[in-house]
Structure formats: C-alpha cells, structure tokens
Amino acid sequence: MDNIIDFNRYKDKKLEAHKIPFFTKNAIITLKTEEGKMKYIVIANIVMRGKQIIAMNRLDKDEENIGIAEAVIENNKVKNIQKITEEEFAEASKHFKQIIKNIGESNN
Image (cartoon, rainbow, N blue to C red; front, top):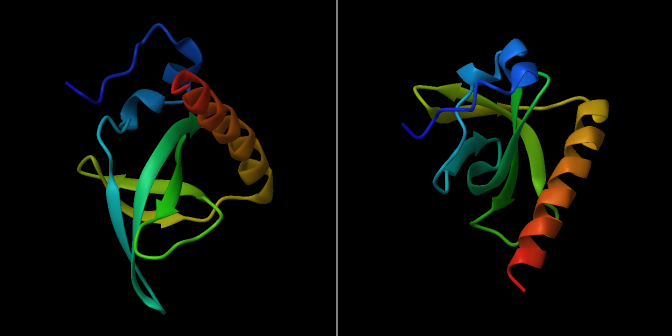
C-alpha cells in the first residue's frame, strides 16, 4: 500500500489529501506540447490546499530551472499537469527549496 498517508494529520485529511497519491518511486512524465513530447522526472511532491503539487526536472533537455505545477492524477498516475497561481507558485517554491536543501544536507 504505497499511496497511504497517516490519517492523524487532521489538516491533510480535512483537505482531502488522503485522496491524493504520493509518489514512492521516481515518476517519469511525458507531456505533449506544441513543441512535441517532453519528458520530465518528478523530483518532489507536496500536498498544498488539497492539490498535488510537483517539482519536476526535464530529462530530454538540460534546463536550469525546475518546473512546478499541479499534477492531475488518474489511476495513480500523472495524467497531465495544470498551471498554478503565482501565489501558489511562491508558496510551493519555498517548500521545495527546503526539501531540496534537506536532501542535499542528508547526502553530505
């Protein structure tokens, strides 16, 4: 049962975060755009305001910035992504920076 959250986290339960799967393995996403297909790897995810927000890095091309978007989940897989508001982006960026910093510190 990889997609279970601790229900003791009342705030998440209240926001229905228990219905949103958490990634336990590296998720590879292929998105179709006007430019063609693009491959991304999900490097971190959070539940924020009842939405699954992912930080992703492009696999098929070097990009300096990490993308942040809302994941549209269907059958426990990322079906698509949606843009988030500037306010959500700012909040998510803070969380992801801390997560990435903590990962870097734990690897040293």
